[in-house]
Amino acid sequence: MTTAAERSASVERKTKETAIAVSLHVDGTGQFDIATGVGFFDHMLEQLSRHSLIDMVIKADGDLHIDDHHTVEDVGIAIGQALDKALGDRRGITRYASLDLAMDETLTRAAVDVSGRPYLIWDVRFPSEKIGRFDTELLREFFHALAQNAGITLHITNHYGANSHHIAETCFKAVARVLRAATEVDPRQMNVVPSTKGSLKG
Image 1 (cartoon, rainbow, N blue to C red):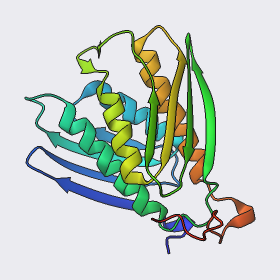
Image 2 (image 1 turned 90 degrees about the vertical axis):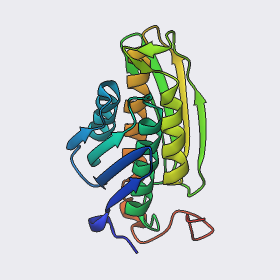
Image 3 (image 1 turned 45 degrees about the horizontal axis):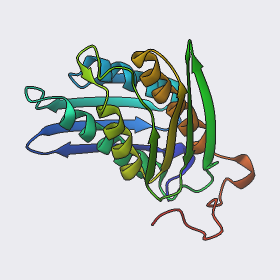
Image 4 (image 1 turned 90 degrees about the horizontal axis):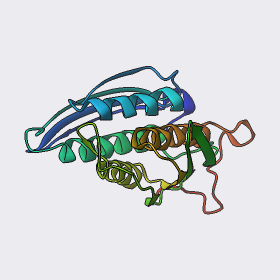
């Protein structure tokens, strides 16, 4: 059983396309050291760490001479695996959270169930196909990989927004905040798995 004091994990993932190393501490202060070789993606991952208060060290060496796809997806896989490992049997967690997050002209909702059942609803559209050199379609790939490998149900809905950078940033910040809330230990059920089944694994 993983206790609240031990909620840390490291994952290394190596394929012919990428080499990823992720370490995280759920009960952190939002400290990060992130280098994926994809500048905009690093900026978004920094938001994820800072606003979830999950300390993250992420290093990625990917086939960026082809495109950013494999790096973005595989980082999502590794973060998800590390989060799943760090949470253990999920005993004592709050489990559910939802939030509407505003940034200038943009409003985005994220809702999560740290359920052991992976699922993503992605209702987000971008006014541009790229943010700088970054393909906006890769953001869905990241969150899908994260949800599948963390074992979480994750819904992300952009209500409105005119700036693609703002839309992307609200997605990461909103997900960060709901992860923070849902993975926090509930003092009223510290030693209880929050499910009538008695398990949130499988």
